[in-house]
Structure formats: structure tokens, C-alpha cells
Length: 131
Ligand SMILES: [Zn+2]
Image (tube, rainbow, N blue to C red):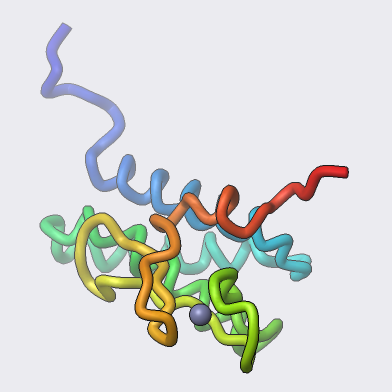
């Protein structure tokens, strides 16, 4: 009845959305790391603390979690997500842009193009290949 007494805070909603978006991109890339979900969880825990200190940053959380997971994967697995745009040359990872801002996107700095929104890599990378 009272919309103010919503049990799910905007912060929790933002964190939940960030977690879902990054997990979707990981699934699209078929990242073969057994504890990849725990990497995401670790980041969400840290960013929960961060956003509690600075609630205005709630809409930046998805981009930050994506970058945290990207950094964690670089140590254990390698570059992620690999650029699906550049067919030749050295394989390289996409970058999150803006690094600290709303509506984060995966971009290829080499080609200078926006590839997909964070959470929308699946259709671009052809995750779940047919045939
Ligand atoms: Zn590229």
C-alpha cells in the first residue's frame, strides 16, 4: 500500500541488476572458469560497500562490476570479453565505457566502435551457437 516501504532498496536493485548483466555476458562468452560466479559475487560484495558510502553511484555499479570481473579474469583466465568486431590482428578485449558512469557499454578502442551494452553481449558474440 505504501510505496515508500518497498522492502527492496534501490541499492539492492542496482546490485542485483549489475550481477545479472555481467553473468549474462559471461554466459555469452562461455568463460570456462569454474568459480566465475564467485568472482561476480566478490565484486558485488565490494560494490555494495562502495555504493552504501555513495548512493548516488548506484547507476554506475553495472559498469564497475563488469570491470572488476574483467580484471579478475585477466589474472586467472585471460582477456575477456574478446572483441568480436576485429576479425584479424591480435586478439584483444573490449573495454567498458564509461569507466564510471551510467549505461555502460562494451567498446573496441582499436576499431573505435561500440559493440554492445553491458549485459547484451550474447547476440553480438553469437553465444549459444546454432547447428
Ligand atoms: Zn576490436
